[in-house]
Image (cartoon, rainbow over all chains, first blue to last red; front, top):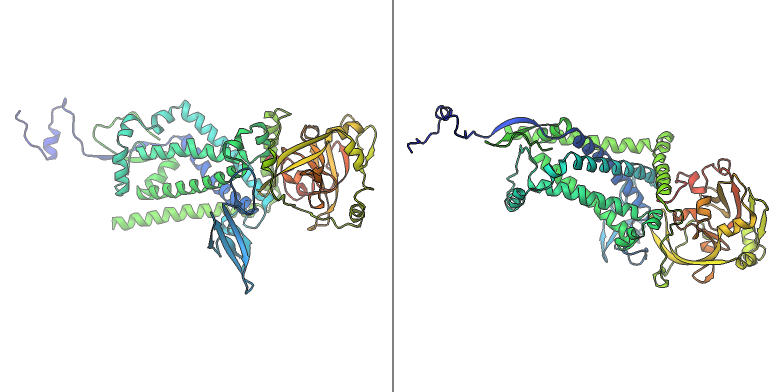
Length: 298
Length: 257
C-alpha cells in the first residue's frame, strides 16, 4: 500500500502500535550465568591448575607411556629421557612413536637451581616443583575428589534446573546453523554479546562436561588397582591399565587445549564483559530486535 | 584508540589471571612443605579408602591374566640385593636356615621353614603389578595364602593389622623395610606369601625367599624379603608409626589408588 520508505528515527516512532517495531540492536545487561554455574566454573579452574601440575609430577616418576596392560620398556609410545653426551652433558631426548627429538631445557632434561637435571617435565610445570611423588599424589587425589564431587553436583543441578536442556543441548535451529557458525568463526567474525550460547559453544561445553570430564575421571580410576578389582571392565575397556594411563595423559592435554581456545574466545569477544559475567553473573548483551525476553541462558 | 584500549584491557585481565594462576601454583608449592596441609590433603586418601571399601565386595578379585600376557622382564624396584650379613648368610645357604616367625596377637606363635610353607596348600595367580611410579608388569606368582598362615597361628580377638618385617635396610635411610595390611586384605583369596615367580624360585632381586602379594594395592605394599609377621592391634608404635616404610615417608597407607 502507500507505505513510504522510512529511514529516520522520527518516522520510526510514528509506526502504528500493532506493527512490530524494527529496533536496531541495543545493549542490555542481563543475568547470564547463575550462581552454581559460576561457582562450579571457578572450582574447576582451581582443580585444573592443581590436577595438571600434580599430574605431571606423578608422570615424572616414570615419564613414559605405553599401550596395553603392561609397560614394556623397550616399546614406549612416548618417553622423556635423559642421555649423557660424550662431553659429559645431559641431553633431554623425547622419544615419540619411534622418533627422537632433542628437547633439552624443557622435556627430559631441564634446569633446577642452575643445574641440568634429568626430569620429564620441568620444575615450573609440576606441583610440587621438586621431585616429590608422595606429595604430588596427595594434591592429585584430594583435588580429584573435589573435581569429581563438583562435577557431580553441577551435572545433577544442570539436569534438574533444565540448564542442560535449555542452554547446553543444541536446538534444532542451532543444528541448522552449524555450518554458518563454523564459517563465521573461521573468518573471525566472532559473536560478541550473545544472550545464549552459540551452537559451537554448546558443542564445545557439552563435549567437555559430558565427554572429556568423565573420560579423565574414568581413565584415572582405571589406574587404581582396587577399582580394577571391582570393575574389571574399567581398564579392559580402555585396552589395559597402561592404555588408560596414556588416554588420561592425552585427555589432560585435550583439557589444556580446550582451555587455551576458551581463553582466546574470552579475549576475542569482550574480555571485561566475559569476566564480569562469570564472576557476577551479569553480562551486557546486544539485544536483537524481537528477541525472546524470558529465556536467559547461562 | 578504542581498539588499543581493548587490547590494554585484555592484557590487563589476562596478566591478572595469569598472575593468579601462578600465585595459586607457587602457593601450593610452598604449602607442600607445611605438615598441616599434607595431613589435610591426606584426608583425600582416607576418603578413597573408606569409599573404596564401602563400595567393594570384600572378595572382589584383581584381574588375572593368561600366560601369554606375562612381561618379558619383571623390574626389581627398591632393594634388589639386601647386603646385611644376616641376609647374606641365609642366601648363601639357599635359605635352608631361614624361618618365617609369626607372632604378635596370635594364639600360638610359630616359626615356619620354606619347606613347611611349601607343604601348605598353594595358590598360583598371574597378576598385574602396579608400581606407584606408574608402570605395570605382569608375572605368575605361587605361594601360600597369608590367611592360611595366620590361621595356623590363630589370630586373637582385637587384632586389626598384619605387619610384615623385612630383611632389607633401605639405601636412602638405613631403616628396615616393613609393611602392613588390614585383616580384610590379609584374608583375601589373592593375598599370598609367594615363594615362586614365573614357575621358578623367587629370585633375590624380587624378594627371595618370600614376598607378599596384595593384588588390589600398589607395589610398595608387597613387601619383599619377609622375615617375620606380627599381628597387631595398631601400628602406631612400629617404625615411624604410619604402617610401612614408604608410609613413614609420606605415601598413603592405603595404596588402592
